[in-house]
Image 1 (tube, each protein chain N blue to C red):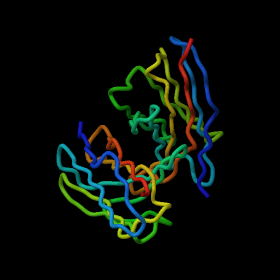
Image 2 (cartoon, rainbow over the protein chains, first blue to last red; image 1 turned 135 degrees about the vertical axis):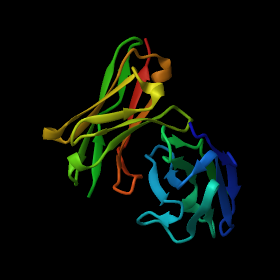
Image 3 (cartoon, chains in turn yellow, orange; image 1 turned 60 degrees about the vertical axis):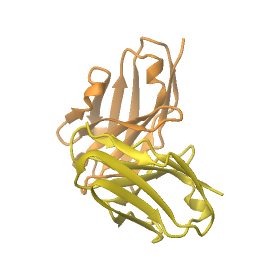
Length: 106
Length: 118
């Protein structure tokens, strides 16, 4: 099983600040996907195939990476970006998620 | 638009079973895998398995073999997950999610809460 380790576990950012969330895989994966989940809501697809924004996702969000190291970046933090972000792989079975990064607004 | 409507919250006794539903609309139900994901309170997401409603094929996370059974009813565009021999460890919110043609989960149900308590 591929284990995805996200860091940091929790962080707070000020409006306008640049934010980078990381996801490291225990073995190489072909792509990484990211989901955003707000409290009490379902996860939403946010970034797919490493670097593609899902429909409706603001262009301040970007994704990058390869192999075992991936990241999600917010170029300028906004209040509405406060949420938990999960990375996910399915390069090999079973499909696995990271444990999430909770991003708060300062 | 694509919608996945899940059944309501369940309070069930230890040792019993529960069946959760996920009614799909806005797309061709038989053409897309349906995945199921578990989220325990305050915890992350755990993949249970998927079913392809077109032919009933299933694939499970080995951890959930014997615990979860996935089925689908094409006539009502509804996917089901049955959980058996319930314990407190099964208390969680369970999501259904459609897998897109590109391989990601692009639409999610609102979640169904299962609480196992005597």
